[in-house]
Image 1: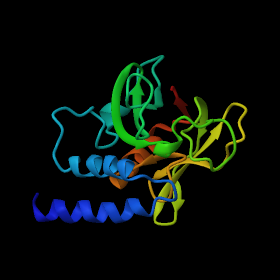
Image 2 (image 1 turned 90 degrees about the vertical axis):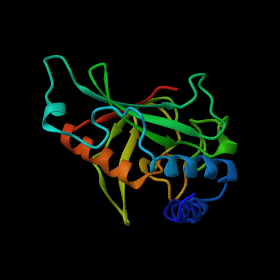
Image 3 (image 1 turned 60 degrees about the vertical axis):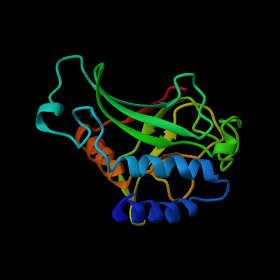
Length: 192
């Protein structure tokens, strides 16, 4: 491992250790892998992975942008809490970001009950707020459009906690924020 990547992995480890109680070593390892693998370019990236462009913002009649989050395991259960956040224009995948929702030990906890239990976000539609400063990071508020005791939900960087929808890579969070501003998307759908 080259020195810059090794230092990046060390820094990420320190950051992830501060994510809050209940964070397991396996979930931290998942996040480190996602961060360090970002150094190596993937073979294929969706066309909007680096942010909105005038061409990608053009929409045809009946088309709209949508934001969906799902567990990364197609069977619907990921013990690590790893998720995928996807941006679509009509049926076309425009961008995709790794995410985390819920602590590893809370993946089977009641997702509708009690704030702060560390469970993944409940399935359903959320009103999505515009990006706003949150300390040195960004916060995109999520307001459930269904009955739940959960509150204080949002999309943010994975420090602190992962009971919301956390984006481990700050640059990915900035790109997502740029997309939300440019498209005025107002909803997020959690599909599993």
